[in-house]
Length: 454
Image (cartoon, rainbow, N blue to C red; front, side, top):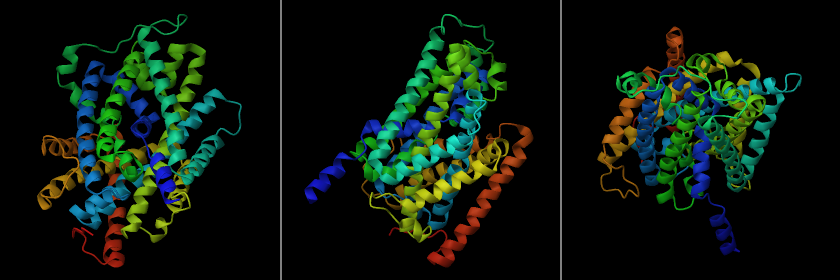
């Protein structure tokens, strides 16, 4: 019986293909599609160069997470790495400010975008608001069942999402449907415009198409050949994402002007309708629903594992340690699902977007902390066995830290809301910091910045 259980456990582990599906499905969200289309509308060839720079920076981020994940293969991920390098206080801040708060605010935005496109598709249907809630509920249930069901669903979602994006890009690049035809666009395509330095200002926008592949790290104990597949899945996923977005965004410039891409509230809807005509709305709906479901599916599996690992290390409420008979951290999953549902029900998309932009700025802090973790642990534990070592160390860490600071300073989409964005970001960090400090001192009874190798 023990051998049978081991065999089943081994067979149910995530393959490299499933891992790539998780990474790609988490990164390619509606927000990333909008960023790609708006960026290409602003900069044309300059944005392509910015995308390439973002790809290099994202690879640097992936290197740090791969090295840390394989050094300490526990579910707490960034919290585990950071407690060993910098102490429990920054560890708690990194995960809650960088991942939990972002998930709670970002998923409702994706759900609201689905509702918006359903209102376009089914304007007379009274229950469009309920459909994203049903999707959230269904994916919560499948997350509770375990990794095997999760991976099968994720593979299907990623396949449909990637297939739809490639279809849109290919048809657009090759000329669209015969009755539609290519339209003249004013988007600039020239080497001179790309190399005049203007691309630098677009890197911050391009970065949001390349963040999130590290969500595979909390699943390290559920994947096949982690030493090989953890770094490889992140690296390959980023290249795949770059190629898909390059073709997808370039195709849009053959049908829409820069002004149309920038002014449309759902530019991918305007894009698919320009390419496919009447059926473009259906294709845009498929893109929206699969992107949102893929994100929810991954977040509800990955972030609860972070919380479960933190609870095991006494960095979060002990109730989050609870697992069900499928081995899923059910309390953490239900907690996250309920927390994401509340903003969707009670907030409007305009107010949520500002909150998400502010929260994602603190996500960048998590990347900076990860790079610092690598630098500190290389000094503190020089002889510790590392199954993956960052190539060209410490250059990727230095590039990553500088790049994340730059993106954080340029994260506001509009100068008129810059002060509000940074005020909210500061508020999030202050609240999380106060709670984390009290938790570490009063509950854990440890020093704020005392490294803990236990």
